[in-house]
Amino acid sequence: ADLSPLAPSGMLINVAFDSRFREPLAQAGAIPPLVALVGAKHRVNASFATWALSNLCLDHPQNRKRVREAGIAVPLVSTLGTAQSQDMLEKTLWLITNLTRDDKENRLQLSRAGIFAVLVALLQEPPSYNIARNTCKALLNFLHEQSLHRQFVSAGGVPPLVSMVESAATPRELQLLAAMLLLDLTAFEASVRQACLNADVQIPVANFLLFFDCPELQINAAMIISNLSLDDAAEVPLLKSGCVYDLAQLFDSTEDKVVKEAVTALAGLSCFPAACDE
Image (cartoon, rainbow, N blue to C red; front, side, top):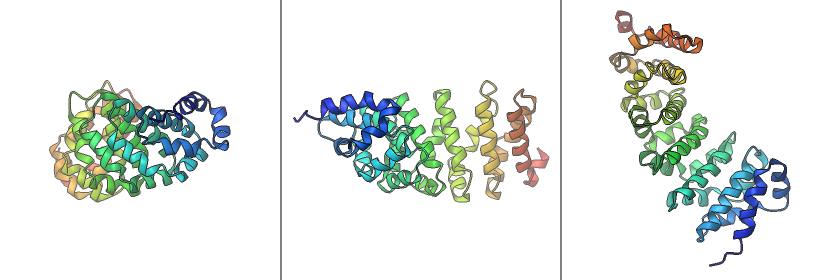
C-alpha cells in the first residue's frame, strides 16, 4: 500500500485546526490532494484527509467553496455509505457538517449526490449515540434549506425522526435535535406537514409539552404544534393528541418563552371549531 500521503495529511489535521493557517494552507494547494484521498483504499489516509478537510472548512467559507470545486460531493457521499468503522463515519459527518454550515451550494450539491438516502439509513439504525447525534447535526444544516424538505421526506426521513423523539430510550439531547429537525420540516409546506402527521408526530410532540425539566423541548413542541395547525387536516390528530390541555399547563411555567409559545400554539388551534370545546 502507498502510505506516502499518510504523514502529510496527518500533520495537516493539527495545523488546519488553527484558524490562522487555514487560508495559507489552501493557498499552498493543500485542498485538491486531500480531496483526492477521500475514499482512498488505505483507510488511515482517507480518515486523516477527511479530518484535515473538516478542520480546513471550519468557519472558512472560501475553503468550503474550494473543497466543493475540488469535487468532494460524490466521494464524500460514497465514503459515508461504505465506511467500515465508526471512526470513519464520525469524521465524514464532521466534514459534511462543516461543509454545509451556511453554505447553500454545498447542501444542494451533496443532496444531488444522494446524501439523504445515506443519512436516513444512519437515522434508522445508528451504530452509536455519537453517530446519531452527528447525523442529526448534519441534517440540521440541510433542512435549513426549504427546497430540500421534500427530498428528505421522499428518502423516508420522517418516520425515523418520529421514532427518535417518541422512544423513552432516546437521550434527551437526541430528542431535542430531532425536535429541532421536525420544527424546520413543519415550517413551510403542507405536504411535508402531512408526511409528519402520517407518522403520528403529534403524539410524541404533545408528550414533550410536559417535559418541565427541559423548557427547550417544550418550546420546540409548542412551535411544531403551531406549524401543524396551519392545515385543516391537522385538526383531528392534534386534538386527539390532548395537546390543548397540555399547552394550557404551560401557563404555569416560569419560562417566559415557554408561555409565549404555548399561547401562540393555542391561538392557532383555536381556528379549529372543536378546539373551543376542549
